[in-house]
Length: 210
Ligand SMILES: Nc1ncnc2c1ncn2[C@@H]1O[C@H](COP(=O)(O)OP(=O)(O)OP(=O)(O)O)[C@@H](O)[C@H]1O
Image 1 (spheres, protein in one colour):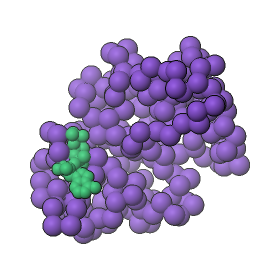
Image 2: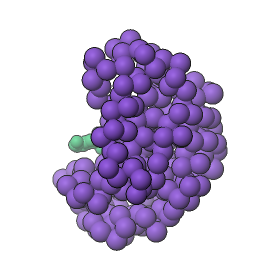
Image 3: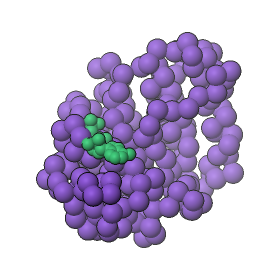
Image 4: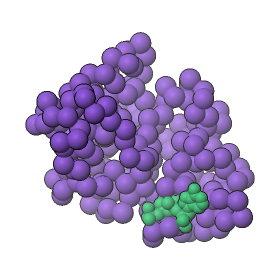
């Protein structure tokens, strides 16, 4: 088991969004967190990523509390939760090269997502600067960059954002294969087609309303 939560309360001060959540994500599994707007999907993802402290309970990754400052946690978890940051003067291909180079020392020990990243068809705009990409192309690049980082647990907030129907299906298939190679994916999603393509198990956060 890669990820486990027990008795997890997620929210802000006196505003509990999710209460007592028990969740697991195993190697080989894609878990889709669903539910209406404002029910706490993004907040839950931030909590799993160690970016928002739980109001109660624990998030355990490989048995240790989620902690962004831990090198082991950072080697295990890769995420796309907010808008990606770009180097305005690096092309799409240079972004990918940079991320691969920066992760080179650990790339042989951990999951190598290079082949998966290549399936997002970044090649079509490889020499374009981020400021000149369409929002869908930027989303493909952001996902390719996350996949290019070695990881065993992917945390994604609405990966379908800005993608056309083919792009959503492609992302679903890539996530399915990431899991098949031994990773686990937890994603918030509003897109049943993506959830289907990823063969994801679903968890409706509104069942755990605070
Ligand atoms: N930093 C914050 N401080 C206080 N409240 C917040 C903060 N971020 C989000 N919230 C509130 O928490 C609630 C849940 O927000 P969240 O973004 O987690 O929902 P969501 O399920 O991801 O929604 P959507 O489907 O619209 O993306 C909302 O009422 C939101 O206003």
